[in-house]
Amino acid sequence: MDPTLLPGQLLARGVCRHLASHGFAVIEEFVPDRGLRVDVMALGPKGELWVVECKSSRADFLGDAKWQGYLEWCDRYFWAVDEAFPTDLLPEGTGLIIADSYDAEILRMSPETKLTPARRKKMLQKFAVHAARRLQALRDPGAGLHWG
Image 1 (cartoon, rainbow, N blue to C red):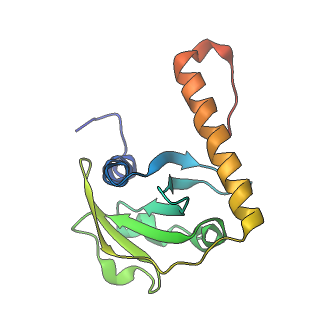
Image 2: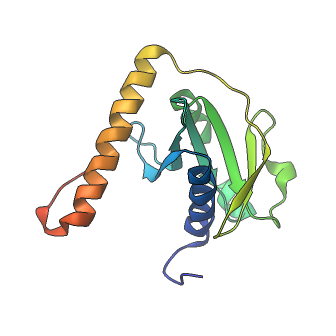
């Protein structure tokens, strides 16, 4: 395991690997709107947008008061936790992914709530800009690009 990554980041890595293996493009720590930051935003092969929140402990989950604000920014919403997490804490009507730092498995599919066309367009553009800026920042770290 990478000692520089926090437990939630390790879960996100496993989630991203799993979703990528199913044709999704993924971005960690994505900001859909001011004041919100989702752990994983995933763009599927059919244009679907999923949000995955990674919770590494009971305290991490109980301290998350913003998760319902993420629902309006995706077609499906998931929690990703490790196999020791008490999943009975997680709200009904949300998806469930069991993950570790290497892979993940979707145990419960989230119900689909399709984004409006205008919201989808905004999110796809934001996803593309964010991904391009992050790639550019990796290729040229001294450029001083800001991509919040």
